[in-house]
Amino acid sequence: MGDIPPKWSEFLMRYYHRGVILIAAGFVLSLMFSTPPAQWLPTGALAILLFAVVTEMLPVSLLHGGTQVTLGFPIVCTVIAMYGTVPAMAIDSLPTLMAGVLLNRSYPLRHRLRWGMFNAAQSAISAGAAGLVYYCISSSAADILTIQTLLALTLAAVVYLVINALLVSVAGALYNREPLPNIWQRSLRIVLPTYVLLMPLSLLLILLLRAYHVAGFVLVAVPFLAARECFRQRIQQIRNYRETIRALGLLVQHAHPYTSGHLQRASQMAISVATRLGVPARHIELLPEAAALHDLGKVGIDEAVLNKLTPLTDAEWQMIRTHPLKGAEVVSGIKHIEPVALWITLHHERPDGKGYPFGLKLGEIPIEAHIIAVVDAFDAMVGDDEKGEQRPYRKPKTVPEAIAELQKGAGTQFHPAVVDAFIEALEAGEFGTQHAKLAVSAVAQRQAVA
Image 1 (tube, rainbow, N blue to C red):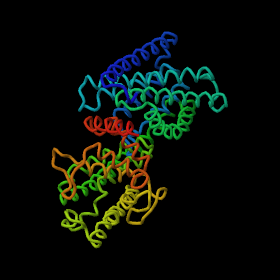
Image 2: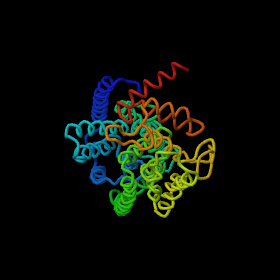
Image 3: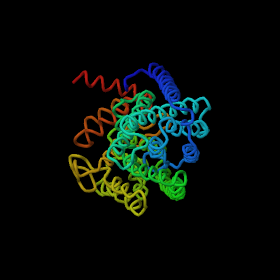
């Protein structure tokens, strides 16, 4: 889907949204007609619905991967087993719709309605399919601890995961014009661990509800809300701490004005490349800090040396080569971003062993350091002509020239897989449409020559 023209992509996205919503509406109506009205939303399910609304309307996002602290998935499995498929669809879709429309007020209402309805629809389809699978294998009266019921619950969870991830991935592929397999794999990597960890909670909720009814749900809900508040305060504390760390990057910008936009662009590029390479979500979360702080050690180097127009002496080169260690020394004592210090230390190492400060080779250098090296090199070569962000000692290159330099250095100066992922992201327009056009043209010309 990455090769779909923008106009076709918008067309497909519009009708994909509508198609999913219509399918969900038909699915819900058909199940409601085949289910007695008294079973649409029993009292116990209604109480759980109110709790689900509260957790969706007051979301707490984790630091890594954007995952939110909610009980959504285990609640759906619990309601399927205890009350049926229709209540599970309501409990999964209604809070999602309310949160999508009422939160994120920075977006226009039309946009919030569109995406809120789509998210609610895909939730309803996922929950409905999971419920049908569960009741094809088991029944609500069965003992939850039997092999048959556990198998039914597990298969229902798998169906929910697969359908939910697929529907969201197709939307992401159309919206971002990115290959579907890439988004599908990223989506599974993010949600699969969460599902595995939360499955036992579903079993606990079912057992408590069967033994103590709604009061049993409260036994889990109250501690969850308390733990959730602790999460919120802790995460906010870490975010404030890291915002202070990001401010350190301004020191480099003040010392060297030509880097005013370089660090921000390098951060954005690093995230795109790391995502394509399947870097863990926690490390992707930390890459902006690493990209923003990778040259922090240059603050302690004489500006006359950094901006020197004539060749550097051996002593000056030695001074330059100390900046990764100096920058890492500043960062190494900062909690929550410990891996960043290593990436900063090694971002000038090379696959052929000719880098610094240690002369490491391919296989000894973290992929994150390789990513920083590539995005740093590209943006340093291209700069921002309109804002005058060129190095005083280097004439800026065009995008095709910079791509040629990266491809020339692949395997020696740069990690080949990182170069490939970077060029793919560049061609896909993730760093700007103008860069994308030049990149596609440059790569096509080099392939024709080859």
